[in-house]
Length: 348
Image (cartoon, rainbow, N blue to C red; front, top):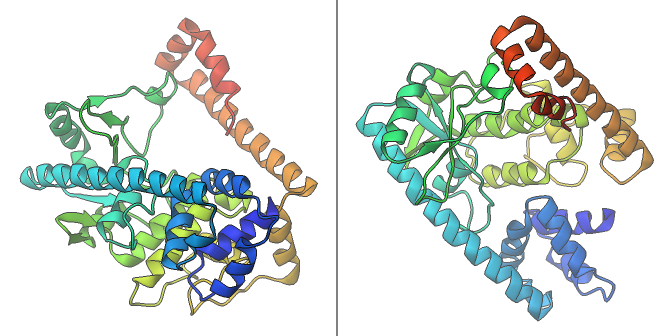
């Protein structure tokens, strides 16, 4: 597992390393099935294939694997084009009705044409940040266009969320998430909704964040929303996205903007060469600590279990607090104990 991740990192890297890759890929002991499995788990399978094409190294792949990768990437390429068309449609609707908005995350990267190949990036939902005062107006507009709102869970409907329940359309492939906030918790001086919207720009009729904000969303979503700061493990998909953005970024990236930014780039430099102006401030002990957490080991498993237990405890305490303070929630729970038990046993 450790070696295959190193190969994946080498493939994704933007520095010239073709000679090193040729040796790795031509090794008779190369485990191709593991490459597919791990790259898929990390969310970078199509990125790996596209980078191999860009480095002109696909001839080192077994023929059947080459065909498989090509088919998967073509499917994803078509899907992403369809998602872009849907995004343009939604953008036009919001502009027509003067809804202040900006598309964020994966679909923004596609709209900005950061990737050399449209099939390179795997995209989930269409995420759009709306002026908090207009989110329900935006939702109503989509409902009038035959989108259907999914429902929050029993517990979700009683909690404050950074986005509304996902909206789906019977004839569109992308679910839409309308955000009033980007992060799970507020970070001073970062990603205030109105500032993100005001500082945005329009590319190919789609409103997207400015470059630094795009980086901030990428890093802080990974570190805060996905608990990366607690687990201190590399998010390969986010790391690759940051390298892609760097190729199109004309100004220096503020890697020292927060403790979350510093950790994100500290983890990247364990295996990759990130932005040119980056200077690591971590100590030798901290460096060894990060390395241990990012390779298969007993220490990593124990650390991850402790963090998972801690997050589960927090979730349980929040559920209990909500049960005590909220009469409507308490009534719902008593009427559906099975969901309450599922909530308390939920894994983070």
